[in-house]
Amino acid sequence: MSTIINGYEAEPAEVTAIIASLVDEEDRTDPTILYMRATKLLATYTDVLAELKLLRAQAVAAIAADTQSYARTAEHLGLSKPRVQQLVADANATATA
Image 1 (spheres, helix red, strand yellow):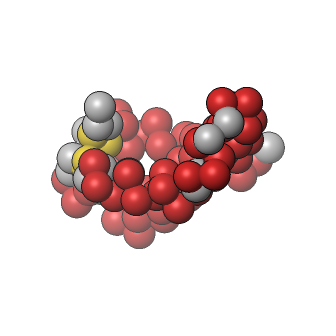
Image 2 (tube, one colour):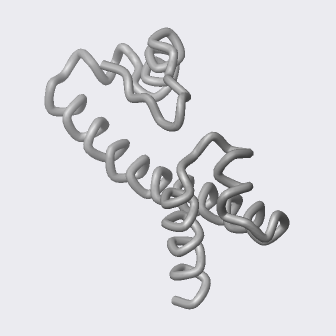
């Protein structure tokens, strides 16, 4: 199961390596420990994901400000113009919050 985001796809081996670095074999010997470890990681990485989404939106907003055009930004990044507008709005919403 692989997610594709704007043409980028995680390599299965990379995902396996990251999981192996976060969950060791000792964690896997007890289902309760594995559950608690996985749950803690899900909570942590949900926050990491939110921060990465914000960083991406801020980067798009900066590019849009430089190009002064959503259309040129969209073409440059391989996104649709409405997606660029949405990301810029997301970045602006968090800047004013």
